[in-house]
Image (cartoon, rainbow, N blue to C red; front, side):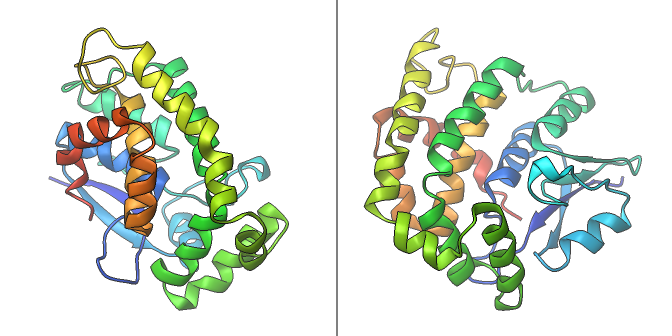
Length: 243
């Protein structure tokens, strides 16, 4: 049987495997459901021609980037880009185990992650350029980020990096801790307690992205609230298949 194809950003350095936050949301969902898939690796030079070739429609300018991952190609050759749309399709294809999709909760989780992820870009993005992606793709990566943020990676790191970045991310970590406490129906590790939902994967994906770019970033982030480590540990089985 033809498996789903998952398009993901390649890593040039060891250990290899998936490192992209957005793709991890989809990868966690696939792994949780046990849906067979094959990873097709692209980089910042090949993403456009590769996705064009399978019929992906370019994103609108508001998206920030013309072509993005995750993108999946299904068994019927249809393609879907955007992790939330992919999650809905996976739930349709294989309802069990359920992702317990909740649009408003997922939007809240996404918003909280942005409160963490975006302030930490001045640490995260320069590391991606230096330590993760192939050197031949760094110019394209750096140029697209400079166009989006209005400064070079070096300027971003120098002006907004390190402790400034962590301080700016604190409200996001506090909001995540609050989310993991206020929705619980029992003492389980997930947002709802013992019942996992897709919004949990939205949160876990950012920790896994930090883990793949720098273990020190992961340790600092996971240590911000005791609930973070409990959530991550409860999802550990689904981060093992990273390629």
